[in-house]
Amino acid sequence: MADSQTYYHGTKADLEAGDLITPGYASNFGQRKHAAFVYLTATMDAAIWGAELAIGAGRGRIYVVEPTGPIEDDPNLTDKKFPGNITKSYRSRDPFRVTGEVLNWTGHPAEQLKAMRDRVAYLKQQGVEAIE
Image (tube, rainbow, N blue to C red; front, side):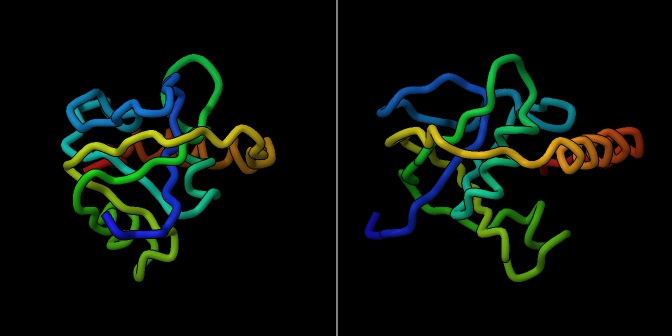
């Protein structure tokens, strides 16, 4: 792929360079349905949210990834919350290859993280699924 853009994937999974992040596993969000897509972003802020909000034990991690196939705008964000894809969030049915890990990142302030978790919990109670 001839794209010089740097992409990130935030998660709690412990991965290594060369590993593939593939669709078909339980989603980190919502009702944990098997994900038909994998998600990435071109912004550290969105990757940090992914790492902080991912379900599971362990610390959040941010990986530098490269798509192995085509990517498209993530309609969960671009069509519903941020028209025009200002979050630079994308998805694909093809795997992403881990090329490295971002080790020195700073999470959101505790009150901002709590507000986001409260919002996600509220939406879950309302039956709103975070991932299509």
